[in-house]
Length: 565
Image (cartoon, rainbow, N blue to C red; front, side, top):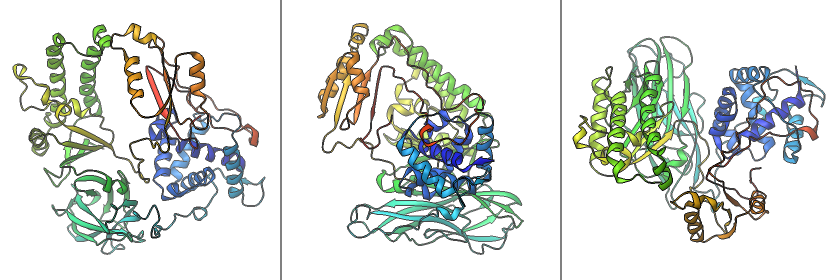
């Protein structure tokens, strides 16, 4: 049995980690897999994006654990195994949040015991209804809604060779939907609607090969796109709903039916937020890759309406990726390349030959392996032809498929006498790799706000220029003097100490470390063995953050209200 106070403490610590600006990469690097899975579920929950305080966010964590016994069991197993440790210290915001969460979790009195599973009922932190933006409000152009997928008769089981109608639409969350995902769609200033495209892809259902349009209005509603679907066989059968804007991937719903039974369908919603649809350019070349039992599943709607098999194991794929990486590492580890930070002409031909061969083998492994079918080979041919037409953007939406697409060498036959750098995807085109995860908040603009003034403090180790002919420190000085910021420079240990302890109006610090000394190893926020814990007092709780190191030039930015410690 765990004390309510102890549970409240853990929920607050998890919420504090989940709102760290470093995002999922930080969670995956320093926390066990159960916490990474919990992070995905919590940040995908509509309640998370509307939680205003740390206490509110902690209650969302508690609510998700209460609603997802599988996540709660995995997390508790890691706690019991000593994979999670919580440090001691003082943090006023954390202490206040713990007190608030503890009161919310306590059913009778402050000393009441609760079961191991988190106590708050789902109704204590209900998902808010989609808000209506008032006229003239700064968020008036942000439309909050739900993407729903609904069958014509939700109570009737899906049967083999029996046609059904799947309806896809935006609006309030449908109680009868087989899948639903929160969406926040911004409209361009002055626009009253935004046009989105819906497509269905499946190897288990017969589905229409054409796309349909949804026109989303400011009130969060849209027309319905109707698709006739027919199950091809009994048992688990999956279809995928893909939403895009001008060819740019927005959202994906994978719905799995147990055909021939009364079992309820399961759904997985993933992708970038629909809010990104209005701020991204059109795309004409797009691929989606996800893991599958046989290797990977590829969706390339420009070539085939059905999913395509990539029958390669992760180990085989890793070998081809490692071969490309080995060529690059061998090149940059040469002393004259490292010092000059450029590849001399005499090394160019040899590097091109080695890298082109490794990149071609990678292309073959994915699109032209021994198990590659005709459709997969057609995708490879289409990719070569599409990217040969001129500069374009290749969008790859994937998970568990870490292919360096920019280094893939596209040619139908490898000819050592006719090599060219232009055959690498990344030399002529932009490669946009989108991680296939569920997001529910609009991404920040790709620039640091500098109103009314951005202040920068730069600390340099001038001895680096004495060791490196490329003079990186001089280049950094020139760069920052041209940025139009309030610049403060330094070169001493005292200057570095001051930079790491900025005053309230100092939003950004930059430091340069000597390349001779590697950074300290990050300290993960976990312990190697279980630690006996009593109900912690308010003055002995804090989140233990990992230390960060610095190699070469490392810089960060933050506002006074959200500066990381």
